[in-house]
Length: 341
Image 1 (cartoon, one colour):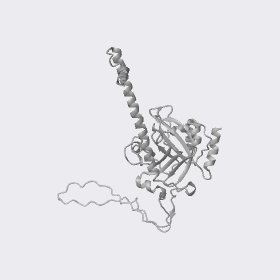
Image 2: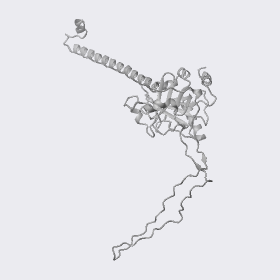
Image 3: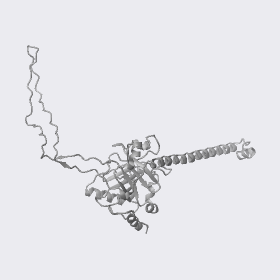
Image 4: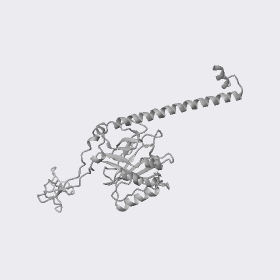
């Protein structure tokens, strides 16, 4: 065996050709070792992420969709109960300092009050006082996830490729790029909602890393393939306050560089009718597939965003519409059947 190896390496050949041959064999051997290490790390990392995901799934037991009613923050409700209103402090106008006097005792200066500012009267029984809106209590199904991570705001399920909790830090889109759901620093981070979002916004935006091992949003770009879209025509996103199904209607690559011709401003959250229709039109115009799903003002959107390896500042975007009252998963699949025809 050793003789064969020496022969293969031209071990006894001291000529320049022999040395070059041995160097080439050494480089090939190192490349093979590096590839083996990479493959082992790839699958070990994939297995770790999936095991962690399974442990989070064990903390969540979603209620059936048909038993969950939409819970929204209540509108301000008037009450005739009077409340004590704060009285503004009196405004004091400054006056010039008195000139020096022969006595060390300062002369008291009168306090000047602007008589045009009148304090607010205490509300009486005929005064309508509006109570500020408050969020309803979170669903019981989120109790364990919230105990594990108080930043939990939802849970996203896409076929058999995504089954993970969603977190959010107010006005912070950086932390969960490098921290997992457990709070530990990780390469894959966590799925997180835009820090500017509030549950109930017209467009909820969720970010996740495009992991090469297929975890997190590593397969999100597959929505651009007809077969994958038909198989995953319905996405479920549960929030702390409601469970809902969504249907994809646009998917495409875009740039986050404003100077790039492929730039798309995905961070749009609140709309009037005109801006909503324009936003949806722009989404449809960029979509790689013409999806036969109606979207109109009043619909709630869900936008999934991940990185694209085709551009330094690229993103892959999937836009979805929440199923309307009375719509069913079967209705959606019938609509999608037109896509496969």
